Length: 101
Image 1 (cartoon, rainbow, N blue to C red):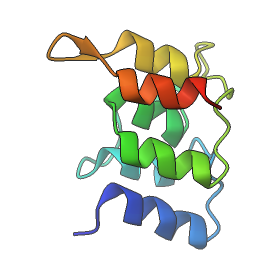
Image 2: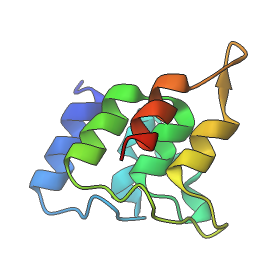
Image 3: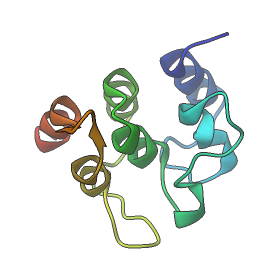
C-alpha cells in the first residue's frame, strides 16, 4: 500500500487541486474513507497538520498547498496543528514548518 506522500503525489499528478476540499484529499487519513475534519471544509494540509504528519505536511507545502487557507469554521492548518497533541506534546515540528511559510 502506498504511503501518504506517495498518495498525495499521485493525486496531484492526476490533476487534483492540492487545496481541494473533496474526498480525494482525504487520502491523508488512510485507510479510512473520510478524514475526521472533512465535514468542516478542510484541505489535505489542514488534516495533515491536525494529525501531525510532518512528511505529508512538507509534501503538500512543496506542491503548493496554501497554509493560509481557511476551513468552513475559520481555521488554518496552523490552528489545527496548535490544538492537537500526541502524548501530551503539541506537534512542534509541524507548527515550526507552518511558521516558516
